[in-house]
Amino acid sequence: MADDASSRQARQALLEVCAPEAAAASRAQHTAKKKSLKTDLKKASGYAKKLKELVANQVASLQKDAETLNLFMYVSEVVAALHSPELLSRLKQADCASVAQLCAAFHLR
Image (cartoon, rainbow, N blue to C red):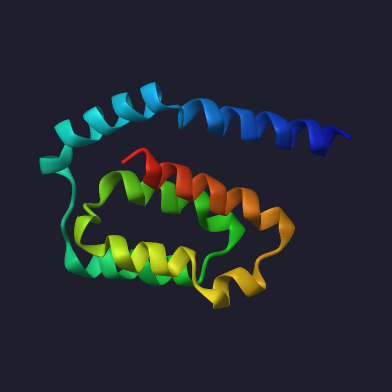
């Protein structure tokens, strides 16, 4: 029961963060700091590879990297990696929350 309640709270927190007003504010902040983001080709392509091999314990580092990397040119790769049949077939139910957090982080950009 405690896991169920904590997962409901996590979902509610994601919904609040991704609300239109909060998303607009987050996108404005992201646009303001866009010039300071790293545009390193090696790091960005490595990030896309990490997404393809997503493991639940990597989500925190992937979220942190998403905040510091300029992934504008890799949007299609990121979406393909998160929606790939290989990833979706090997995900466990516990990993779905991690993928939802990553999707929310990209939504806020």
